[in-house]
Image 1: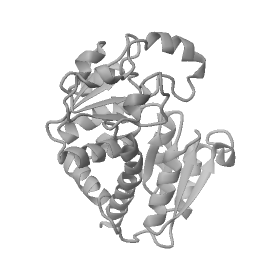
Image 2 (image 1 turned 60 degrees about the vertical axis):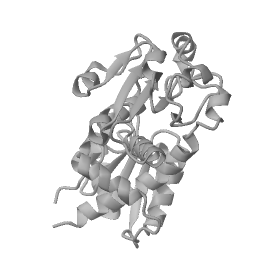
Image 3 (image 1 turned 45 degrees about the vertical axis):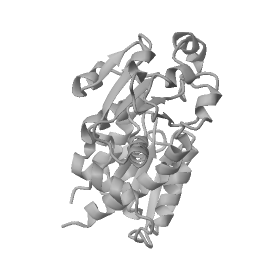
Image 4 (image 1 turned 90 degrees about the vertical axis):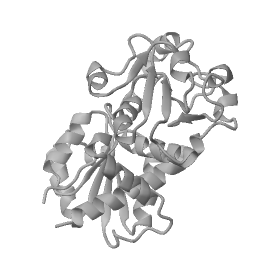
Length: 296
């Protein structure tokens, strides 16, 4: 049987997304992966992703095996497809945090077990699951909510955009010129794009941002700080959202750049709930993928 992979959020349909979020809420999940292992590949350093995925695997009874780039050398020591075939012999699932999305696609093309995107240059679907879970917990629903994204049209933004039609939410994206999401993503998503943070924030249920300079872009940091001037989330911008609105950030955060300390650490911030929900959402995902693999 061809395994179900999770390379981006639109690998799900709306009903499947709801099931995963429901499974994420299970307080005592079944040990469906007892005596099995999960391989976790990391081309990039990781904090929340590694700890939350390892913990989720353990809570389902699995033994997580974290492998760094120098352990496996994807496409240097061993081709991605050969690595996927080998790991499929030993593990129930493969998670990968990689630089290039194409690496994930080649892993998935050869694996006989589910492959999960733990982050790529194009998408961060596990973060999107945690974001949706957080919004549903805060507002009791997803349908009809508006999220204003202020900042880089990066992988986190793109997965949020892709999630919007599945969850029934509206996403407004405000990015500096030259840092918008790719045109392909705009064409396949019903997204409102602007260059004005105030437009994205006006009447929103949540305001979301990310760092201005992501991992691997360090040489661009000075140029990016200049380009993103005026895109800091502060109390004035939060005041344009609904009184019940929350602030979201996938972390790590740079206080004083993309967000002020009073917002990040203030009463409207849901970032630590988001961080915790990486564990719950990913556990729900692993549980769902296991159920898909066991179906005839």
